[in-house]
Length: 410
Image (cartoon, rainbow, N blue to C red; front, side, top):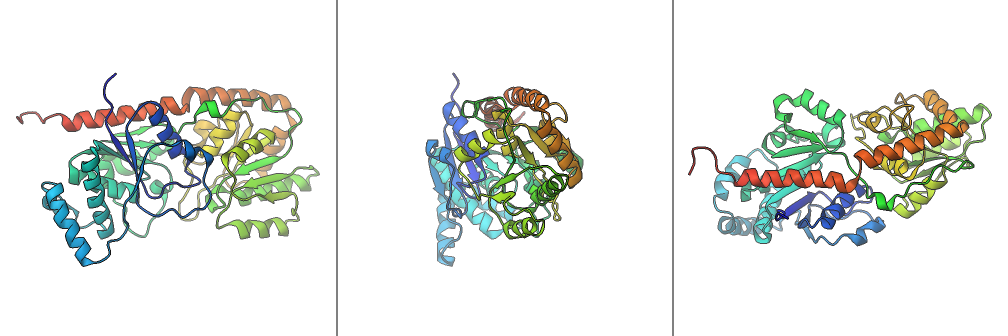
């Protein structure tokens, strides 16, 4: 077996409750023997964490966000001069970059040198990639990044230089074919090296069970933010109740839209019908999915352009055997293939969502057929170990290309 390169995973914050896909990826790398180190650029903000974090063995280095004073900055520059040959020339190319990103990049580059890191991979094309790109330049190694959703679509107040990141990366990964097409349409040849690698699951942890014939209720799981479209789901439940259906809905998750959603539930006369349970550990999410008749994922495009890429909770529900109804935003139809692996409805349409939910609730044979096809698709295309292996190939090829001398150069 060939020796695998040592890789730095750069993330803005670690851990984060909602970013189980990063943890899944790292666990798959660990199982395959890839040497990995995690670098986090901001402090942890959350107080609840998923139980799978306990399985991660990879060390975490927290890169200081701010230097104490000008003297600390000067000391850092002197250290960099010794640790990173040619750094002053490289820093000269960073004059337009954010000063905080540059300082963290210097710290990250020196840490990579000390630890023998050969490749940097960042998650999300914003802060983590900003710092990872500059650090790779400073220490003369390759870098790549995974672009997900908000980092692609959201209109930020400050420039994110996504064009430069695409230009300089050895390879760019994104999580859906829809994203690939969007980036190539927006950035042209700069996006030629964008490849799709789906987020994956450890399928051993999501054993399939066919939907129970007597399962009841609608379930949704996700952060309570605009792009999740949960206000559309609440309205769909109101429509179903108004038509005489005795349906209930559970929503697991927390976020800034909690008060608005609670007010909508009360104003719609759905108190006790639509119930909020706050953020839950993954074991509880799995239990809720197994007992639900249908899983709803009514994502929309937010007013600022923010939208989901391919929600991990959809993968989880489909892997477990829970029939799903989702909207047709971004890459979701690649996963929820209408009438085959789920029911897919137009975004922002509560009537269509209500009709699809009713159809799924009424037709046991449909639920069983869709459940089986969904699990088969997850096994074919969303196996976490297989997809992480593709990502390791990206790393290995980047390191090999970086070490290869240019033609005509001795």
